[in-house]
Image (cartoon, rainbow, N blue to C red; front, side, top):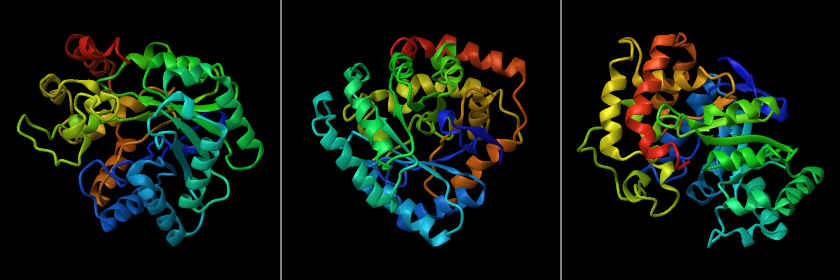
Length: 328
């Protein structure tokens, strides 16, 4: 699998990584066997980057990763986690030195490592980006050897631009996909200029860009695609990229016409993201072995033509942009 550099970490990582939200929870039931199988398959396929968070299954995701890596032995992949969302309520005043250290120590225990590769502030309140004391705490944890690097996971483009002003921010994680094209206008380019890595999450718009969903598709009660369509539990942009379900399905049918017959729409959508060299890694999720294997195949797809890229931009501008462009 092709490699890219993850910003200031200087690490060469696979351009397709493993998004470990689904094996933790809120994507419907995923058995331990399937979760382990998904991760094993990703690693077998050459993925060397894993993204998780302390709240994915309240630590379940982190613990599964630790178990699988221990079983496999050998060279350890790059593991990124996220902290902050354990706060209840999730408010800026909770981002104290004590709480941040406790979160990081818990993740170190869950992941069975003394030093975490990368810790990202997990979509913190916007106020945090204007609170240099929080970033100073992260600097101190680097000095203490608890973390090797840190970054941020953002909801809004402007939060990412502000994060770039902190010199030790190594990476920015954000939603970037065919339905969320605004980051490419400025943020991705600025991040590259400052040697900050870009981690592209929600690459398939919560499964919409697999082309498998229909108007009558039903999601289980514990799946965020059921309970968070309007942002009931967290930012609605994390569910279907913030696009109304019916609007998205209509756009998907137009995209389908552009997908070559020998590849899946999911692989096509991942390849679209990788067309942007400012992206360090894209992190599709997987709930089983087959999904991981399918995600890995996107790296071997030929580059999309200029005509296809232009057509996808037109679909975005005409059908999707009014719903998302100025919101995130």
